[in-house]
Image (tube, rainbow, N blue to C red; front, side, top):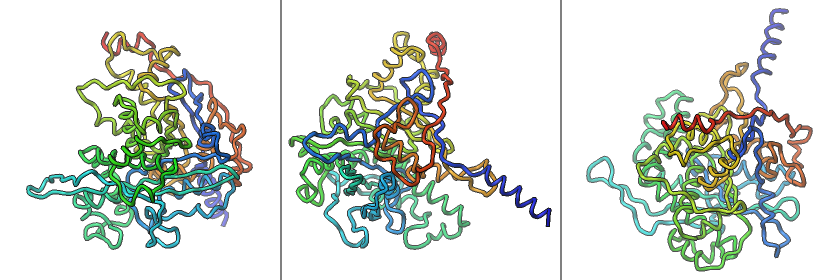
Length: 482
């Protein structure tokens, strides 16, 4: 009996060691000379830029999903955890917490279509030739977007525009390639049913519905995905300015809706972006295109001064496909107020995410630059020059929250939850709402901290003074071969 009790006690001790609670490990800014010194506005503070003509503080959010999302009524609705997290942060019990799985559908009855959505189409039918000679795949519809409105804390209103692109591209492009190997929505595929349970689930979540999204995006159809999001942005800007989805029509092509937006005087509350996984790369590419195309358009107005909250970003990984023998265009000069900011929120155990501050520092140290273009990261003026070259600010928020896969074993945590569990962390939602100041949660005046899930938690943390070790100017020049 004593031996059994000893084993149980030992197992309990191991279990305690293996359980991960939420931790903020670092908040780093590319513009800083040391770690844990990053600052960024939260969603609630972005609303301070709202027009003075209204008493309601409103923030518009473009929400982009990532790899592995298929619009399935049986799955958790897109952005539901994020919307629920915001409501919980204000101790709100609004009905809008529960959103429909399918775009533009009623929360209770998925078969009932609402007028809070719009379909974005292409300007023509795209015909893609396949690896099977004589066969082609056709694409016309691009995305569906709907609007979810949530009022919290009296006069704060969050309007989330959910952009669904994966379902359309799965049916048109991916299913003909890998659909025979997938579990499918209604029944098991002939091959998938032969797999062991968890191997089959991982194959679907990571490869069939996951990596295939990234492969598709890196090919010719990537431009259509970006067009889908551009059209959705123009439609959302119009909707937020009072020209709603009913007036726009049930279906619009991305060129026409952006021309309508360009011809109208659009005055809206500020827009922010929340992106997951592959959605971060899509938003990143659209942002860079807008900043380098030499034209003023609706995207520029939505991007200026805003913030991109990138959950589990894939920018460094997928930027491998961007290397070219053609020079990259430097964005037009932006003032400090107009320069957008990327806040990359990364779970340290996520297989697919690479932080952005180390990415740019590593790229500087391992790439060849001309003498006049060498950047000394130990010098503040030089760091600011790098930000000007990029055209945007960069802040990394390194966190840890994923639980162990196996009980009593802390050496391997759930990689899927590390990739998609960010918005299920109340503390992380608090940072997204309130922002950070010099590496700490900016609690001053932020109303999104009343959550019962945060009561009793110490949201302030010890800041390490460890300075990073970027290469000195001489070292950078030596590594470039000069």
